[in-house]
Image (cartoon, rainbow, N blue to C red; front, side):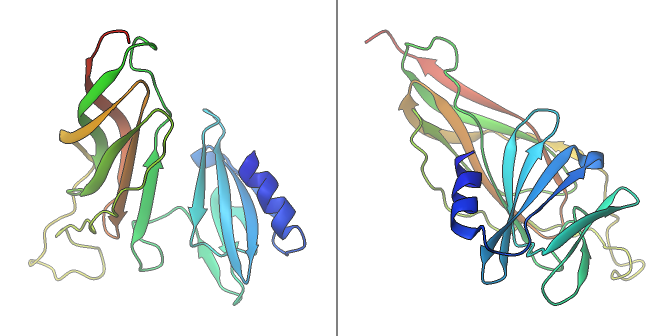
Length: 211
């Protein structure tokens, strides 16, 4: 709500405001001009009500054609969105922060020690992962680019490449270190060849006594 209010207050005279219902991905997309040809998209999950923000798609208009989302930019080009593992040849950088949870008893302090993000992924994924506590949002370093040696149809050389696999689970434990009452996982990824779905996140903690 605050992000939308600020955007309207600061950029209400800009062209490009529009909304789009994208049923195939359970998305409600709001196109938000930021000035100087830059646009963000505020996106709501129509099932859970969760929100996220897209950047890098400087769209002046959106439409659905045969159940797929298309947008047009300021140069008159039309792009198909939400497809493939890269952003028109560039890497896709993602950042996710989960909601704060009290991990059991609200009034007990905890020491968070390990975390396990669970992915469906088409190749080995490198993440930058941490946890924030007690509603203090911190920054983490950007993740290294995740790549795969699997072939891309139309570019690989027959007989010299590795076939790309289907989705597989990646669920590696990583060390974290923080102390607090409530915890939120925080992660960054970067990939241009791998498709990724985040399925769940497990966090281990030791519970202290009442203070």
